[in-house]
Length: 287
Image (cartoon, rainbow, N blue to C red; front, side, top):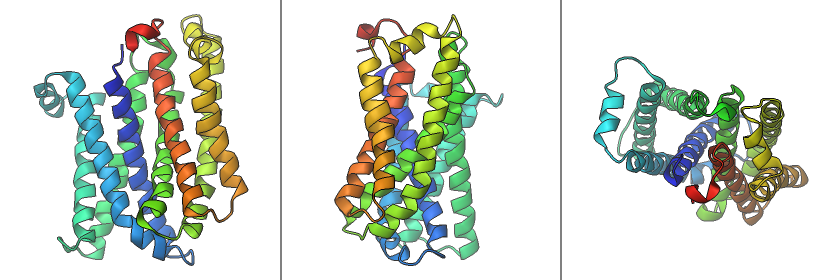
């Protein structure tokens, strides 16, 4: 049975890594998109702090769930290169890269352009590993056939990147930054991610329904006790609503942008909640 701390870890680690990748992507796009540099300049540091903080809090939740912090050291020192070991080192590398970029942005550390590019690349690479690792680890739990699909890592990557975009959509309101150009740059990519996430989720459920070992979990989400959460919080509020709003608004103001960002984060959390709860038949024992 996955504890609530695991769900929180999966959400915060994914969203934090996604926010880092989204911020690096926007820094690249700012070279060619007129008007993007100004809002990005205001939210860049808060985005890095938020991404690093979310991953750090998520990792803390993971340590609390382990109950024995020394187990984390054993995972890091595991020479066998297990999925857990790779994921743990990726978390460490990501936090290190994020801290270095925060230091550069606050002028506490001076690095050359090449070094900054190397840190950004290392941070993005480790972020992607964390996104993939979370879904890959769940898909390797042989006692949970519902999660034993290559679509689960795909879902986690798409959702993490979308949640990262959601974090950036909230920041203009928090930082009093112009949101129009930034919203458009994020929304164009995020709309594609939402479509891919919806397709992967649909495929996962359809395949699960044809598998006797996974059909019960899929049924819980589609028509069972988890259906209200699945359809309202995930399908409608977390996927359909932000997708429609991103298409409807070309230049959203800061409040509208923040509302869409919150919906994206809501969808990301409930995706992980549904996937972690559905394989277990007794929901009341989870709560």
